[in-house]
Structure formats: C-alpha cells, structure tokens
Length: 559
Image 1: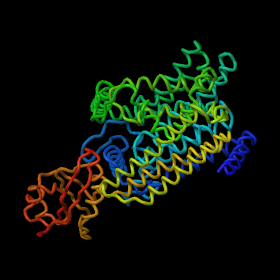
Image 2 (image 1 turned 180 degrees about the vertical axis):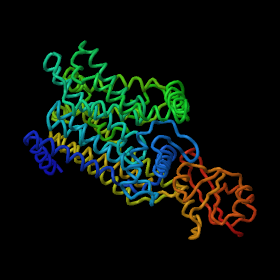
Image 3 (image 1 turned 120 degrees about the vertical axis):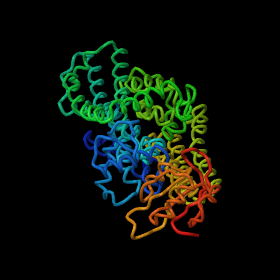
Image 4 (image 1 turned 30 degrees about the vertical axis):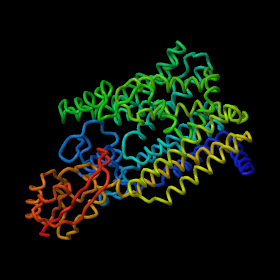
C-alpha cells in the first residue's frame, strides 16, 4: 500500500508542479472527474424522495407543461415557499434531456449534479488562488467525495445550486481580497466587467433560487472582512453601483411579475411563513439545540472531516494567513446565525463547507507531513470509524426494512476500507496528496454505498410500487388516481395522471363509473371500496411522515 501511495503522491505532485495554467486545468479536470465518479452511483436509480424533491420536480414539470415561467404550482395549488430559479433550471434540464415524454426523476436532478461537480471545482480553484495547485488538490479532492454534497447532487432541490451561486461570488471576491491585502488595502483598480457580471449575477441568481440566503452568506463574508481589517475602499473594485443595477435588472422582473400574479400570496408564504417562521420556531419537527450543526459536521462533512480534525491546530495557528482569514470570515458569522435559528436541517450549513475545506487545504501539506503518532493517531482512528459506522448503520436499517442490497454494501465497505487504508499508509509515510485520494475513496464508498442501498430497498418507495400496480389501458389518455391517506408528492409526480384525494367510498363510486381510474386506500379501509377490483397491496414506510403504511390498490371493474 505504501509503495502505491508513493507513486500516486508523485503523480499528483507532478501535476501540481506543472505550469500554472496547465496545473489549474489539470486540477479542475481531476476534481470534476472524481466528483462525477462519487456522485453518479444511484443517481438514476434513486426514486423520487419525499417530500421536498418530489414537490420541486412536480412543480417544475407543471411549469414545463404549461410554459408559464412566472407562477409556481403544485397540482392546482400555488407553491410559493421558494423563488423561481430552481424551477427554471429543472424545466430547462427536462427539455434538454428528452422533454416531458419521460417521468424519470433524474432529469430533474441534472442541475443539482452539475452544480455539485462545479462546486467542488470552484472550491479547488479558490484554494489554489491562495496556496497554489497543491492547496487546490487538498480542497477539491475531499469536496469531490463529500457525503452531504453527494446527497444533494442526488436531489432535485435548491441546495446544490445555491451552493454554486455562493461559490461563484466567492470565487470573484477571494482574489480581490488577496490582492487588496497584499497592497495594504489601497483602493485597487475596478475589476473587469466579466468578473463584475459574474459576482453580481451569482448573487442575483442565488436570490432567485433561495431568496436572501445565498446573498446573505456573501454579504456576511464581506462584512466580516471589512470590519476585521477596518478597511472598506477595496470593495469598490466590485463596481457596486453598476452591480446593483445589474442585480435589480436580473431579479426584479420576476418578483414584480409574481407580485402582480399573486398579490401578497408569494411574500406571505416565502417570507412570512418559510423564512421568518423557520427563524422564530422549529418547523415540521426540525428543531434542534445550538451546536447541532457542529456535531453533525463530523458525519456530513466526511471524508473531509478526517482531514479537518487533523488540521484544526494548524488552522488556528495560521488564522492570520489571507486564505485562512477569508475562510473564517466566510464560515463563522453565518454558521453562528444558523446555529441560533430554531429550525435546523443538516443541509442548511452546506454553503459554509467549502470554507472549511479551504482552511484545511491551506495547511494540509505541512500538517499531513507531521508523523501520525500520539494524539494525532488516536484522532485519526476516532474520525475514521465514523464513515464505517455510517455505512454499517445504513446497511442495518435497509436490511431491517426487508432490503437485501448485498452488492452496494459490499462495494461500499470495500471502497471505505481501501480508502482508509490508503489514507493511513500515506499519512504514516508523509504523503499528503496520496492521503487525499484515500479520503476521497472513503467518501465515495460511503455516499455510493448508502444511496445505492437505499435505492434498492422497495419498502422505502411505496409510490413506485403503487404506480407499478396501476392498470394499463391503451384507450385511456391518462389514469386518474384517487387516494385516501397517501397523497405524498412522490405519488403525484410518478402517477400517470392527476391524483385526487377522496374518501374510500367516494373513490369506489368513481371507479364504478370511470374505467380510466384507480384508487389507493389504507388496507384497513379496503372494505369501503364496495367490491372494486383489487390490484394488489403495498406495504412499506412513508418517508414524508416516517410512519409505516399498508395500502390496497384498486382498479375499475368488479372483483
């Protein structure tokens, strides 16, 4: 293992030592390929996940069907929790990848996958700007295998895209700060219009994706840097007057249009309920005490969490270096705000994870060169156990649900074992770049193993089983599905027609009159179906509520 680690370390060192332009392109390409390799397993096989993903995808499907790029609808109801940006991207992705002839969920996930890959590449690029190609590898490779980013790459939601908008803005801000600091914060010349457009365009599209969250992360970074150094004039290089005009030109048209369309409906739902409501009180049972994100970090940030744990003393010692200062200004203020908020979900702090990767990367080479002995060795073993436990717990859970995903679990465990073995051997031999590949392999094994196992467990996907039982009637343009007790968004997305909520007796009456229909009701209420034809039974877990379900599916006609 050590000899392989030496050869691998040498190859990566040669890449980092090549001419700057070639090294930058090589690092970016390598990180992108590693991210794709880690994020693609289960990308197409994972069914629609309740509830957020299925809601986003269904609303995007309806937007593509109607061509209405202003209003956001879920069936016949408005969906105003988030602005329109993600729906535009998902609708465009569906059109570009085959149109509405298919209902496959992975088409709607393409923006998330692309955003996750580019997020890893931009993290590497920001780190390379502060510490060279070696730092770029140290930031990008662990990000390319990071568990939470891999999960978000599999979900047709806002979070991976939001992360990309934050990184695009920080990619412009980081070198500006570095140069300004080198020059004693003398007013630098304005940035070129391309970078100005990228910065303000990223902030604007982040607003269209998730409201003030993305711009808030960037603004807090700027505020922390300006207050920390007591210097503001260097920010004039961003051309704020022209930038704000561009921001308004990109953002205002849709906000004005949706206000005209909905009155105060959008603002009440998006700001009053979704944003301010989550700050004031825990919504949907997602409350947790302050410090919860810090505790979850050691799982969700794997495998970079191993590297972060080993480098924390070095990061603190280097806190006055430009890149580490930038990372701390990026991560700390926003993280504290999210810790104080009442509603907590692990992906809320995803925009700060690249800052942690940046800080770790800038001290990785010198820290990893130290002997892996004493407390450092113990700390490595403690952190290395966590990805093994994550995969083992997930495997035990899906097995308890009746799944038998032997191949995903075996391959995942093999990848984790090989990755940890390579990382351990490389660190003992003082080979920091080879250790990064071992960490990436660990993360890829955890992400791929867990998601592939979950995707291969039928009990977790009742909607898929229900739709598989529906009758195929060539003369019917669509099948209307009447449901009672299982109106989950995944069923709405997968169903070959509208889903209507009715009591079982009412559904039975509809089935008696309409041969292009079906019904799904709790099995305990199946007697109310008045002799309708039973197509099958579906048991499993409702991911939306966390409760077990026992459902009966009926079709038209008599039993």
